Image (spheres, rainbow, N blue to C red):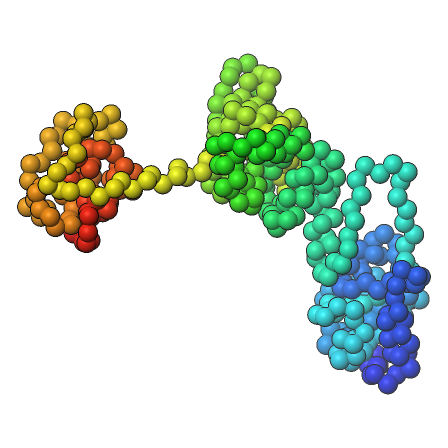
Length: 365
């Protein structure tokens, strides 16, 4: 039976000093968790010491790593509270190992360098490394990589997939910046979007056919994880999304694909609310050439307007809803922006719902 070491054991005191002074000047490092220690063994990094808390002695993952350890490795079983004091993290995994710090050097001309500072969770480290491998490792996608990190959307790329990332290049983001600097309606529409919403328009669930055609011109549609639909035009020479973004290259990833595009896709935003017309006097409607029906009338133009409504007579001063002609209610007409059209005001329809009343509220729909 293996002995269980307590806090007073001299070896524990030595390990506490060793782990406590670990730094860039130390020749050893501490790694944590059966999986990480197993990965170290996979690449030939054999620990000098392995420490396991008493409660995890029979843990299957711990036992699997222990069976792989050479006889020269010092294996220590310690009290649970001792292990918690030795472990460098707040909620440690049930295995620690001390290994020699690997020598590392950068190539003379690295294409991409991932710099990490103050990483508090080993899981975050894995996320950043995998994301850099998938996106940031391409120097043309550095702006996208930064934006994905800022919005937390890397998690969408780490799932089981499959997922297709439509990846705008740095030049595409530069052109978007030029549009924003120029101002105007298009810039205002883009600025009204949240960055996360903009990026989610580029994440397509599943595998997407983005290959050119062999002859005929074809059309299709892709839908983002946010529900935005973009038309796709397939030609023998090009694949264009939303009439603006051409596919530059498609690369396979572990859980999908990364398709580089030469423009940033901008989802369609909801139209701005229509201004609410000023109140009118029901006894003195404003006449106009499109008194009842105009080109935008959203009812049945063949149905003449009712001369009276028993629930809301035409000349009444009560703030009520006179139902418009056709099959649509005041609530429906208002939701479609019809309150802003003159035929509604001139016909004294939906005065309560549309806010045409000069005073008071209420009425029937």
